[in-house]
Length: 140
Image 1 (tube, rainbow, N blue to C red):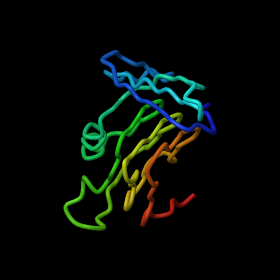
Image 2 (image 1 turned 180 degrees about the vertical axis):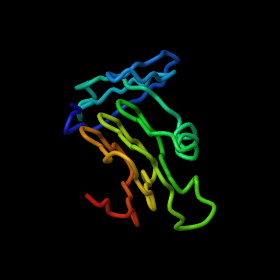
Image 3 (image 1 turned 180 degrees about the horizontal axis):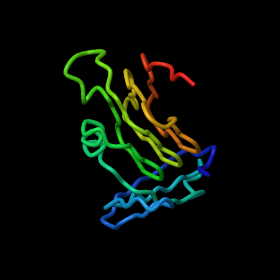
Image 4 (image 1 turned 90 degrees about the vertical axis):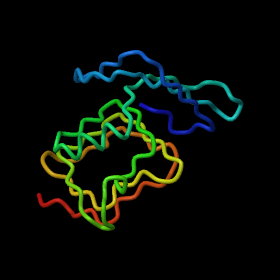
């Protein structure tokens, strides 16, 4: 789905509604362009844009987390914690065909994924480490 090799990328957030294949509506659209080493665009896509504060609100409210076809910047579950290493429950997490971009890391440490199986199918992590420290293994 996304290019396997690219040298540069550009993201522009616009005030245009985006509707995912499953019908989820995002109030803004992320326009992503991927470029080769010669700065020629090799791939373009549009995704729904959701601010991390909205994701955090949904998690704390116990809502199912549907980030399918979304662009997410600087996700850090530590923003929800009052104490270090306190587990945070995340219900029905799905981020299929999503793009994650972070300055430092996409941090899911101490997340307890409940409900349906977690999916990052066909997703892309552009920058930043991806951290899943201390996430309990799901029983099958």
